[in-house]
Length: 243
Image: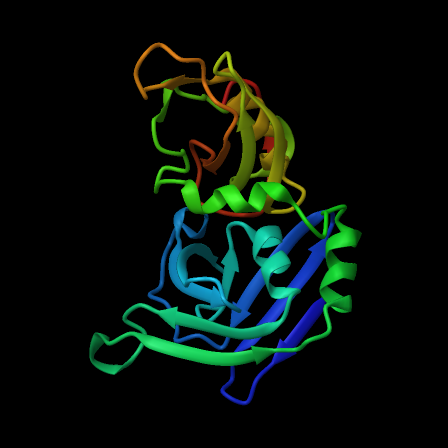
């Protein structure tokens, strides 16, 4: 784990846990309580160094003042460069005003590098540059799902709820490949691999006109899982084929 805490109470941490990479921001104003944690999200506006601030999606943890990045490795690769970092929490201040944090990240990136390496994540990834081109649905302009992916719930010993965020590269025939599990929870529920298998069943199409093949572009894809029947729980149980 790499972490740093600031005088204003803000905590930043990056860790590799059971092969799953996570970046968390702590010390935030408490988010509203939610029942279905695996479907919840929080938007923070983050700028690091000379890059323009941009909205990033985070997931809520058990502690409402902690948020986990949906795309942790790309964020960690930004953080490893150090420098001025701004984090804006929409509606986080009194009266519904935005709350803005301004901190200076440590110049040393050795700790973040070690956390990335522990999860087999590259220190530099050219795919990160395409993240800014993604729309809210995780697809770049002019790409759409011709066949919606239909992920299946993991079988065997797993959990009654979970989620996974993956990124893939589109291919000329509309399939996706080079998929990476960006994050998943619970870490041993098999939700990441299930999401990748589901994404491979989908097909993309180019809506840019002219019948052109699908260009190679990065896509981001999130799946929330809930087991049918029974009370909501993250406790482990056996998933049967008839459920």
